[in-house]
Image 1 (cartoon, rainbow, N blue to C red):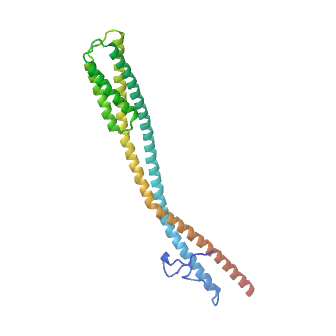
Image 2 (tube, one colour; image 1 turned 180 degrees about the horizontal axis):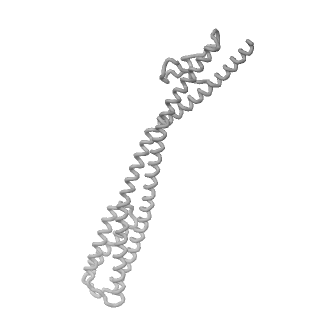
Image 3 (tube, helix red, strand yellow; image 1 turned 90 degrees about the vertical axis):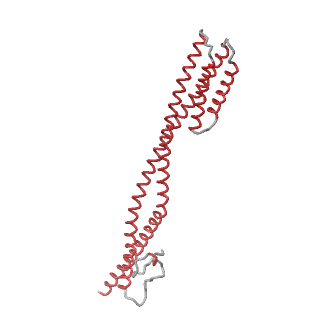
Length: 260
């Protein structure tokens, strides 16, 4: 097993090569060889102390970054779940509003006795149906969606102004009820929208923090891995040379026994 050997006169790990210093095996007292091995072990341990000290600091920093990153991701994901629920609820409301509006238009068109505004009414209904279709089928941003909803509300208000003939029978009551339901569902959809706007901004804030922590982790990753590698290498070297040291001590003990 090849191991690092150091020039003991220097404290820079750039001297860590297998060719800088060799352990003599001939024409030298065994105690000189033991002393050199001891010095090599001490040098490895010196590097170990330095690297382990730095690793403790960077490991603590990395742990805090990971904890903060996980927390930001958890907050972001929870908000995104709420966003998804609100979007689903809002889309369901839009669908229900559309169906109620179609039903109301049918009642208005069938039961209107005076047709003086028929062309204008038909145009308004056509515009609303086109906008309804966009809400149901087009992926768009929150702001664009808000613009379409506001247009529909304005067009609906115009329909109420144009439809100046109000049947007083049961059909008229049905139209009134449908109109009230549409307004209530529209208000609920507006509340969903406003809540969406608020929490979407928070989600973006948490996502930004998550990305920032991830970048910091990425920046420390190289040094973190390098320190792990060097610590493992020096620990392996210490284990190797301590094994050699133990063998030498046994050899010395055996030699002393022969002298006796």
